[in-house]
Figure 1: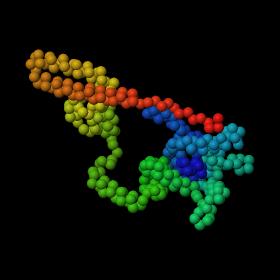
Figure 2: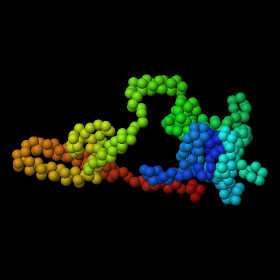
Figure 3: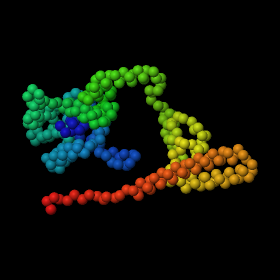
Figure 4: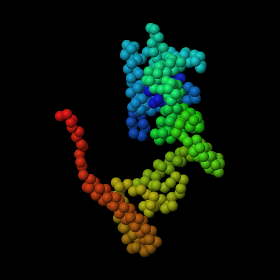
Length: 323
């Protein structure tokens, strides 16, 4: 029940989970290693990975520990009969299996439903009519979708976690969408998309994707980062020191001061040679550099003032009231 509630998997996917499906994934951005649960293809024939939450990790650890304690320290290797394809799977360390006499076996759908009904009956929970609460494994799939969307997870992400091909299928599973609101919003989206060219909804080509990536690589400059939006030309002809879109790196303050000093020397040289146009252009760049230096100094002074006004209260110590 806990595995169904924390994953939203189908009953056939639940019974196909093995010890080998608990894997780790290293985030490329931070290098952090996170546990993942591999869900083998079932209805949609698409394999997917689910992030293992701390609650689900505790459940899976409990299941594995129980199997090992009842089988000489190792997860038993069993085969499972697929009632849809009518074949036996190869022997695998399935997480959901039980003893049948002297051997281990993966339970069928009817056995899972029997255990679920017995568990709910033992709780004493009844419905509005006073009858014992009845719940199917698929009901936990709806609970997972509703809780995820209600907690703020975007519905298209929930759709991927559930293995749905269309977002409309996921919306049927959730009980938090107002039907009229969804219908009105989708009508608005359809009308807006109908007014846009069809080629805007195609997949980007390799050349377009490479150009998109190179745009962000070219935004890295000597003094900081260029904030120019993708697909727009440089209005200042790469005279970045004059451009308001240049985000100065505070660590480049000394380098910016050197550039300003060099501009002053060049202005003196231009005046000595009578290059009036050159003097005007260099003066514009010098004024822009002065503005950026003053902005960096204001930010640094504000940061220093804020740090001096902070009082360290230390870490509170909680004492035992019985002592």
